[in-house]
Image (cartoon, rainbow, N blue to C red; front, side, top):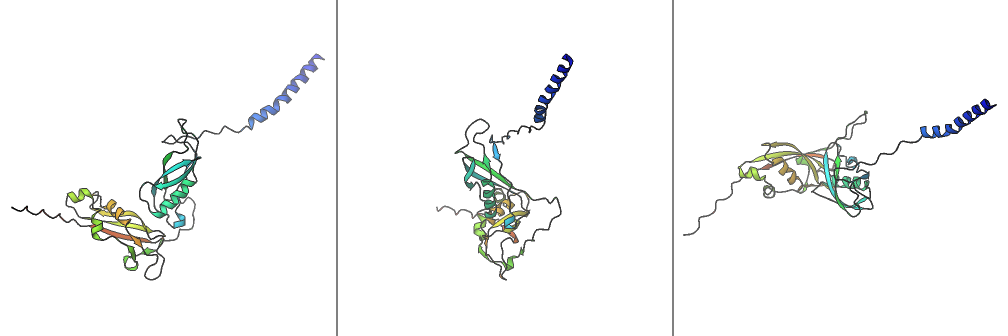
Length: 246
């Protein structure tokens, strides 16, 4: 009789322990804590990558910096840190609005009310699966477009690279540009001569002074079109000071 009682007690103990074992086996793993970024900020939702598909721009890489204020974890009142083409600025602002910060940073300090600089990256997309080719940008030519704003040689000379001017060098750069909805240009340096003297960067600054009409001379829309712009910098020696009167 005693042996039967021991067997029943053992079976009962196994039955009571079974649900606990099953419960332990299906318990979800703990959620890892978000890792802080290089600035010690903890993101509940990190800023997504920039998306330019609505502007029909798909093969330009850029990093846009925005200075934003934190309000209850959201990024508000964002402004560009440096001059940025309109299409990139609008897309970066949309990406920043989707991000959310934790209420405390890595050091335990509150983030609410703080001003931070957010970097939104626009990567060149890489197709993993075959997909339809994106629409080809319209190739615009200087002979078929009208410029609402275009800098003259005197305005461009104000952007002359300092070191090249001191060395008496002339140069030029060719830019490959996409036209946004406002006629402004987002450009990359296609070539520069001589290389390494700053003419490409100076040409990029000059490109911000251009604005194209919304239609070509034959009635096609220019937004989303691609145009190549050569910009030349011709060195002119400064005038020698006049001799003082005797």
